[in-house]
Amino acid sequence: MSNLMLDSGMKAAKCPKEELSLTDCAFVNPEDFNDSVKHIEVSTSPEQCFVFTVKSHKDVLQSTIGFNKLQRKWATLSIGQDIDVRPFKFDINKHTLATIILEVDFHDKKR
Image 1 (tube, rainbow, N blue to C red):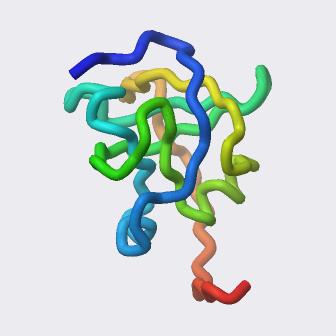
Image 2 (image 1 turned 120 degrees about the vertical axis):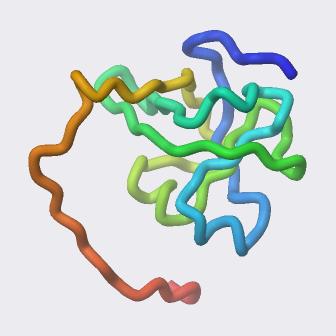
């Protein structure tokens, strides 16, 4: 398996399977990242970065990342959009949550 270099260009895509979209993970081709990469940072512009938990799936085309609809909405991603991606490692000394606000809603596929 290869391991993408930092800031490598990829494209946003749909989640490869409906049932995987419920996992809240982004999916990559197994050849794009090795198994040690658990999270990725996606840059949609110089000012906007989003961190996703990532898993590999054979149905994802190389150099694409499969996002579910809610992830694409949150990160303002369009299918086919060029994105910069790099592995992300959480550092407990730098990345902690002091406050979190959660919103729970029903997911309606028709909307």
